[in-house]
Image 1 (tube, one colour):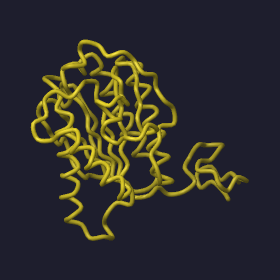
Image 2 (cartoon, helix red, strand yellow):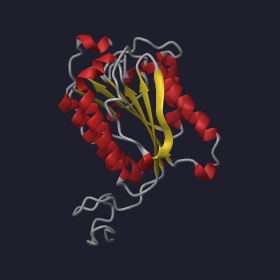
Image 3 (cartoon, one colour):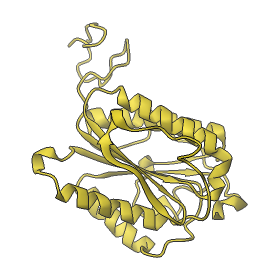
Image 4 (cartoon, one colour):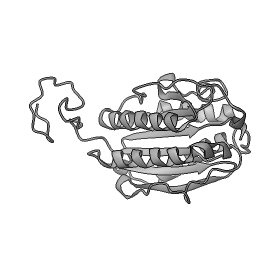
Amino acid sequence: MKCKSCKTKIKDKSADYCPYCGEPLSVSKFTDINIILDRSGSMGSVKEATIIGFNNFLLEQSRVKGKAIISLYQFDNEYEATYKNIPINDAKGLTDKSYQPRATTALLDAIGKTINDKDIYYSTLNAKDKPELVLFVILTDGAENASREYTKSQIKKMIEDKKAKGWQFAFIGAGIDAFGDAHAGGMSFSKGATMAVDRSSKGIGDVFDSLIGSTVKYRSTGGQFLFHQQGKSSATSDEDEE
């Protein structure tokens, strides 16, 4: 086969990417990307890195051939849909004004509300208009301490039900035990789709770099979402309770 971008002939017919220019060798599947972003007070120490990383993620996904829509949800003790179900090329990046860390961490409520929001959206679509792939990415640096509507057992059940339908869920924990029972491990996230990084500018930058490549791979091949490289776990700090 031949790469459509650089026109080079490729012998490995099982390759997902061109080994010469790095471009995907097939048009990506129609993907619905949902980012659930922690904006609790402790994220203030990595605010700039989070803005840069998210904006790079948007830029790189917009360059991928194939259709994708994206929704961005932010949460502290309150929950906000920054934008929903828009073409990836129309999504705006974060700024100092649109991303302002504050308050506490209602993680469970954010996940539950987002899953329900997607169910409502899909109920309005004809089968032919629904995405082929659905990805949820949760990025947080703190322990749950403010949810009022959902329990961990409810969220675990919701995620299990959606995974059975092919939805994919990824969990990124900055400065916490990401795969511990209090976080991804207790909510049915798979270990390969969980990443723990230092709560630092470098840690946030590294995780978005990994997320970019993993999402491009997922969009082109489908199947299970996996992080291409695992970050290192770090000890929980006092700020994690914010």
